[in-house]
Length: 119
Length: 119
DNA sequence: GTACGTGGTATCCGTTCGGATACCGGCTAC
DNA sequence: GTAGCCGGTATCCGAACGGATACCACGTAC
Image (cartoon, rainbow over all chains, first blue to last red; front, side, top):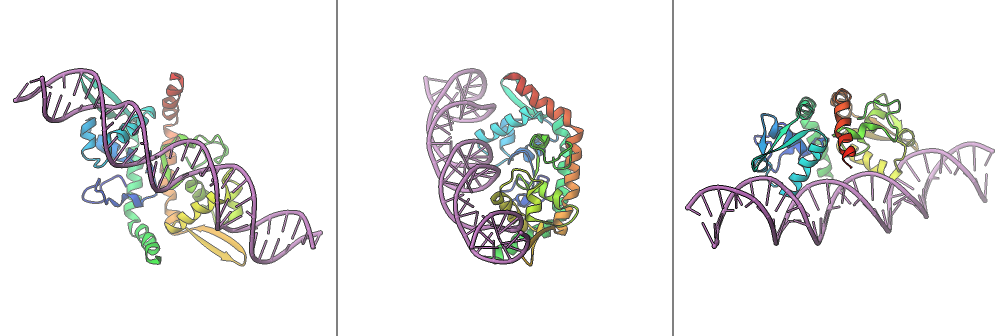
């Protein structure tokens, strides 16, 4: 999930992949979490989102902009991204999804481990 | 979204594609809705899920089974699928997601139309 | 026996996704 | 002037996704 379940929510081995619930593309959820408490610059987003390349992050942000989730603003030569009201409104269902994942963590894990054990 | 927003939730032009929130793969959400009120057979699932080919539906169901969302049971030569408790528990966050989509319908639509108008 | 329904599998295909790598113009610090 | 940061773009790539089509074994209805 998107909310910090592990000490580092953006950890490579962040188990959030286990949750079948996804918001937008691979990075959308994490971008929303990054912008939740205020605008961030492009390079500020890249730091917590370890491993994302500029191209992929750009594409995610452009899609989010198209969908009305973020607003891109150029001030001088600073580029900042911030959530729109619509983007901010997504935090609630995201929290619900995170709560569900946390609550059913063991079941999710068991299902996968059962499969792993089968091999 | 997955909940009936349009008269026919499984309509080809069902606007649920607009919602950025997805549960599992393309058909997972609709399968959950189909199984919400009891077990269904393979061919019973294919009817409301117009357009899904056997291969794709099978793959979705297998994945859902692997993830502990559905149980597949063979009785005689009847094959039935039903939600597990975990699968059933996904209905709540799905409802939350549907409520969000319904609530922000116009904004979602406006964002896309803005793009369409640009062309 | 033969046509049909059930619950699939096998093969092929085009598109999309996400990433790797290289490169770029504009500006700043030194 | 030249090295570096910022915010990207361009190109290429492999994997996954979703669909089309053909085929199949099994059982039943007629």
